[in-house]
Amino acid sequence: MASLDRRFRGFRPEAFSFLSDLSGNNNKAWFDAHRGVYDAAVVAPALAFIESLGAALKPLAPSVQPEPRIGGSLFRVHRDMRFSADRSPYKTHVGIRLRDGDTVSSPKCSGPLFYVEFDATSLRLGVGVKEFDQRTLEAYRRAVVGKKGAGEIGQIVRFAQSKGHDVLGDSLTRVPLRLADDVDNELLKRKGLFVREESRLPAEILQPAFVGYCLRWFKPYAPLFRELRRLAISWLERR
Figure 1 (cartoon, one colour):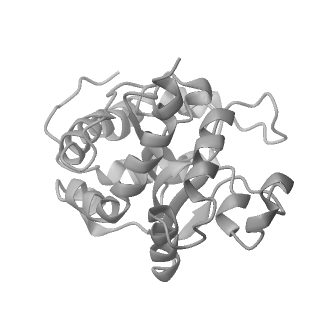
Figure 2: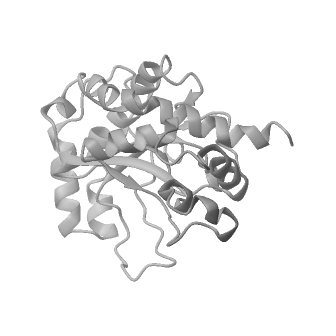
Figure 3: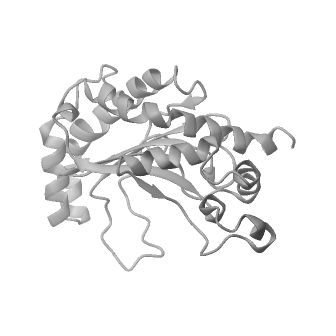
């Protein structure tokens, strides 16, 4: 693997050429022949980016924990094919997560995270939890019951929708029966809450300014990260 240059200078154009070419050559022989490009143009700048973004996020989310390694904040390039009909062995995107340090070892790693993902043409930024563990789900429901859109989480969801951002996460078709008195509360149907935007690759991704670009997008959603962390640790602290 290429050595880590701790000064993030932006991703190299070769990274996006590599991802584009991988889409049409998704096999071990091709990947092995181009592993040096992957290490130098994808892995090395990604690890430097993780350190820089982690430091930039600290004032907004002090508990955020950058893990500048493959399998830590940088997702592995190998796909998990055990339950997939798609037998291509490699991901054609780069996934980066910055997790909450206090919940990183919780069941299913279900604490909140800041997420950056890009492929050859698109960028996806997100914040939240796609699936709560059962105890965090109960804490979440206690936080939103009776509030509909009036509480902090409801305000964040409305803000995301006003910006045209996706509000993702597992969801029920109806409010749980025991909470039926609050039947119009859409928040109670949620089993996860993850806000995301997909866009074309910005010019900043080739520059150190990409850290600031991501930070500006994340800033309005830092309260969501902090609130979901609070709900997750509310039961962890009682164990």
